[in-house]
Image 1 (tube, rainbow, N blue to C red):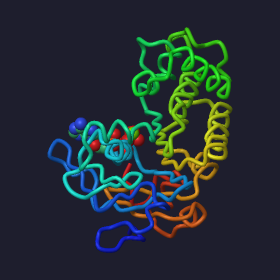
Image 2 (image 1 turned 30 degrees about the vertical axis):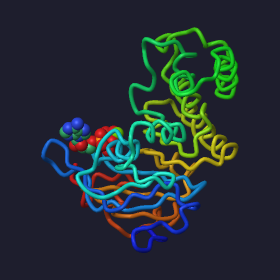
Image 3 (image 1 turned 90 degrees about the vertical axis):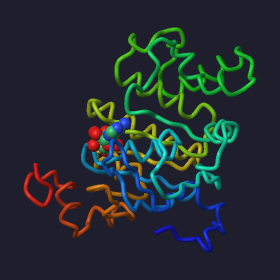
Length: 263
Ligand SMILES: Nc1ncnc2c1ncn2[C@@H]1O[C@H](COP(=O)(O)OP(=O)(O)OP(=O)(O)O)[C@@H](O)[C@H]1O
Ligand SMILES: [Mg+2]
């Protein structure tokens, strides 16, 4: 349950960047998420785990305001997002970087236009300056010289790295990653894990990372939340969740075909 809350006012909001309070999400007449409560603290990285279809991407979409919960409230950087108007969202989204599950990039735009998208759309920065900044960010993800290429000219791993550059270009306070390592080879997976750690160290941004990958979760996260049948069944420090007695959590961590999760 969210901690620092009294009479529905967050009294140390400085320390809490995302507060999800009792949200229920219904899609196509089906309840996808229920009783979802958690706080993300400043500088903290939370890994959200769960089976395919558990509602992990749905949760990120709610935090980004792309989807409206049937009930409950979400606060992002002190703002009650259901109350935001267009301008409020524009201001807030500048502070949120997102690495989408798929497609990671816009096919019809060059890498420069993709990575600079947030600045081209939402700032008055001259294009030469944006281009310079894009080149700097591309260098940090080992993609020097790809500015004028199109996404389909890059490998999957390179596209992922370009989407990281795009997510951090506005120096966001919060970064949301949706399965950043899915579909990558084991070496690229380690490269991406290291990149997430570097971003964390350099920007001290808070992050939510949706991942199936236990290695990624333990490498980059401070806490893990496990979603099962629409609810958070376990949330806490990585080591605590890894040693959970909950049979569902155990089965997921061990990748076992026997247990309460029917395969
Ligand atoms: N627009 C929609 N209309 C109806 N149902 C939807 C919609 N979007 C998602 N769903 C359903 O919501 C559930 C959760 O989907 P979601 O994409 O959040 O899962 P996920 O945990 O991210 O899965 P994965 O690990 O496969 O990405 C799924 O059963 C999905 O079919
Ligand atoms: Mg998903």
